[in-house]
Length: 434
Ligand SMILES: [Zn+2]
Picture 1 (cartoon, rainbow, N blue to C red):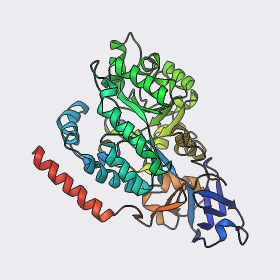
Picture 2: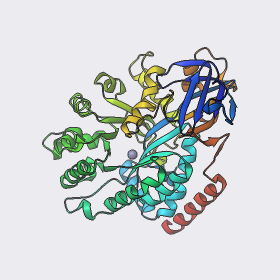
Picture 3: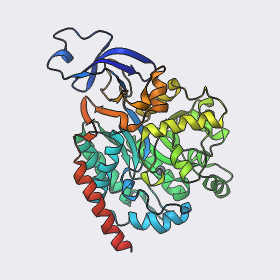
Picture 4: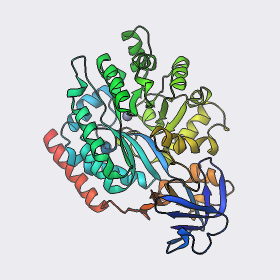
């Protein structure tokens, strides 16, 4: 495909006008002010895409999600966290089979592709359904079923273990798009035995890890009471958990000493501002993360605590919160934002050559239409994208050189059928739950 006469914002947040970007197979092969010469790979039989009044960006990484929770969007609203989980979420989730996960994942992936997401990190269960949906949709994903349990839990006999092993066996059919990971749900939902065993197993098998970390004040403080005054980060570190590359979601209550540990160990934080606000958890100290040189990414979390998977909205909110909380309009400029949602995500997912707009990189990108009332005039293109733009302005998303979303429809997803199935699942489960 040859994008002609298009504006480009690269992974460093720098805008370039009137560019030609060519892709061939799964790579970006041309990026220049002038068109490729006749006979060049991306000039032969390529679809030429008219880029006037459009902007092309590197595809976004949604680094914390529970994608099939789209099925629970808006279910049990307004309850305090514990009651919400025990009275609503857990009983509903217990009824979900792999087929339900498949439809819920397709719904969520459609929503993500429509906001420029090319890859996401996910924690959920019945992974075979999630795998099938991700495979068909064309998006990339790093997926795990996180361990949960007490001292009696033997991870090697656990369903999570079986599902991760099976997922990893199936991954080669996704040609690198899907990566199996390991992880624990959180410090408070796992015994010391589980944490040690998952850390050991991950080292043997070289898994990337996912975990929820210091999301709420109660969780953070209760950990100290239980574990010799150690914070969740210090406690997990003492058990060797951070010896493997890890993505830690939330980090709202991380202390200075925690940030030193995470920086030292190269742990990536995933900042989920909507979810933290909606559940009343608080606001993560983004400026401190930067100050301690911790790698930061951004995530939507699941649809039942957000309530959408719109990454563009998440980015705007992250920027606004950081500016407001720090009384500093210069923080979270586009140059600061772009690495968080592109290269930092790709690195944390172990994806080489991804997250960049440059020749030789994987062709993972999206295009927004500037010809909209809220997008004109353009003085500062990145500002329009992140402070005026909406996901409805996304007109094309490409993963590994394939157009997976265009003008409202995802190529690998039958949206009409998905909407029907999701309504069916809702009605069926509500009938059982009463
Ligand atoms: Zn989560």
